[in-house]
Length: 173
Image (tube, rainbow, N blue to C red; front, side):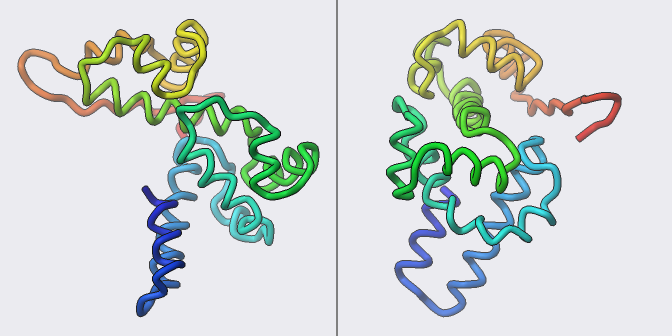
């Protein structure tokens, strides 16, 4: 949604569109920082390569439910795969696969909380080719299984909000 907002603002160029684009970029970076994808939001802005990978981030956000190859992403920027991996890692501070899994788990989390679909349906709709890989990846990111997470969404007749702090080496991120 944020990337689509950036695209629309840039296309329509209404009054103060550049400020709206900056705000959306800040939101994206805050989400990446909060979830441990980037180490520092300040160093992220220092990179002149952020704008170079924006189309790749948009492509991932739009096509997360499909099979995405490194070749597909390299074609988005018209660069070779090796260069894409280097620039992506430099800017986002994580691999393309880790970022793609993060996006897919985020989308799956929303589906788990808002639908009655089965775990396998959600796994496939969020782009995972195997339920077991989805389960492992979900547990790695959310510290619980998808089925346990889904059961928590409705407890004792009251909707609850679930917040999982990420603990790494004694620090809360």
